[in-house]
Image 1 (cartoon, rainbow, N blue to C red):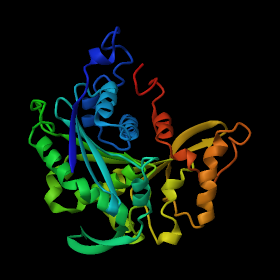
Image 2 (image 1 turned 180 degrees about the horizontal axis):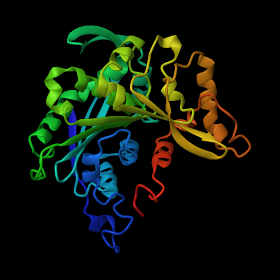
Image 3 (image 1 turned 120 degrees about the horizontal axis):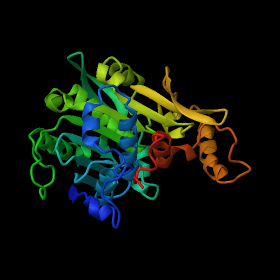
Length: 350
């Protein structure tokens, strides 16, 4: 287990030779207030902020802290918790970003790194594990994706310990002084593998009684390009819990193939929560709510075709070919761009 602490650079450092605050910088003038005030989800500001956080979680703590400061969490504290056990396909990294005021914490899980072979083995480690979850005051075992579950479990207790500090009004990093306020609003997010881990953590917080003080502060779980994490029976049980049904929000960009994984050849899996998909029609695109969740890929040939969509999109003559599933649509940059509000230039605030 490794931890790393970072404190966001000052706005003077982020804006050399420029005013520290302008009409476009930071992106959201009072982001802590906006995150605390958001009461109906999905919220467009929350969706953009968390998509950006999830996308930059493929980097390091200093970069995450810097980007969240640019969005509006000035002087934030960022704690990285990571654990790697190659032989067990564990490569788990979580970032906790605490606002300087202490009112907000964002928990963001890193997704599948393209060059990390262990990450890919984690995704492929589909063989289900039986895990007991308590629904309706009765514990019952459900099949969950073994790789996703082990990676959440690997860093869970350090993550919970940090959240406990935030609840008590303490700084989550040792090098910073205690914030003036206790935790009021917690958000959990991630892209790809990180999205699966975020959904799994949301489930754990919702059904484990010991975590109720944290659950009371949890406002939403926003995931991007999330694969399925458990059996249809587990998804059905989750959808009977109001928070898991209404405030776990899954974003799917166009025909992102990862949202349709694992394939049926790996067993039966299902989604829970609310599903929003970016669709294009007549040259315009927008997010719509899907009444029925995306189904699993049923033929392995579809996976092969989905990978071919990536090189095809790089060529002008094949760019606009219709694809049932696409790996190219999985990129976190697509989610950030599609969720950027019209008045926002970029996540950099420039």
